Image (tube, rainbow, N blue to C red; front, side, top):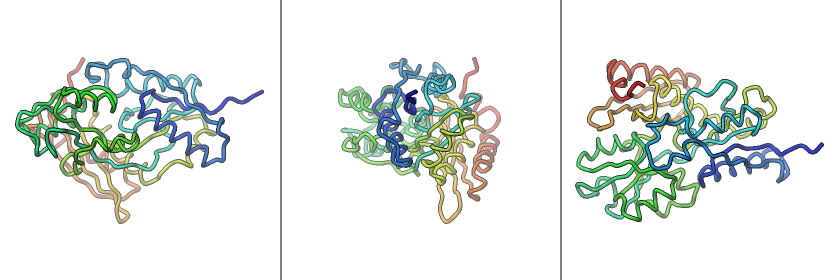
Length: 312
């Protein structure tokens, strides 16, 4: 009986396919596999079908993972590759994160023909972004700018910018690097100016919790430092019950054997925000994130997040 290849579930966007092919190449190299031992299985998700409306109106992050998780659980694929920032903090029962690759640049890139930086844009300029986190931080920094929703994959957003739909946009520098599109970058925002999304720049690989063979294969690809930082950030997000309706940012950095975490939550208008910074041991990463989330909730007050996230 011919054994089928190990199947990687992935979205079909150019960035998702790049990431899945990258994981495929790493697996083949790490274990000396044949070229036909690992294959891609593109899957269209609900988030891919909704092209021109804000995803937060339809369920948020899980729209990019639901069908892929279903394929994992029914055995149609063996593993799945995701941008970690797209993964909900709670995974479906039976699905586990088996590896997190070494993180790329976490910063956001500014792209515009109307100014060399966000600060240099003329008053009233239009900034397009589908991210509430970016929208709120732009409004905090430049309340004189117009901010509009800007859906689509990386290439679509750049094309919209070139057609004059907006004067500027912000995109993750890691994605632009992976796609070879950094030539479009006008400037790069520091993390002090624009705190990134939780897990931005990291690629995660999930598989079935009970699939010990695949989990062992994937362990060779895991980067402990990135996994530790991302665990802290996701614990923070989970404590805040973060959704696509809530502008939340967080970044954990490891230096000199310690973990430093910064977290931020804003209202969508960017007129009110609360920040926190914590320092601790690497082995306490998840606890640091949870504690920071708990403290930020106390700082913001009981009504801050509930006022941002409408209940159905």
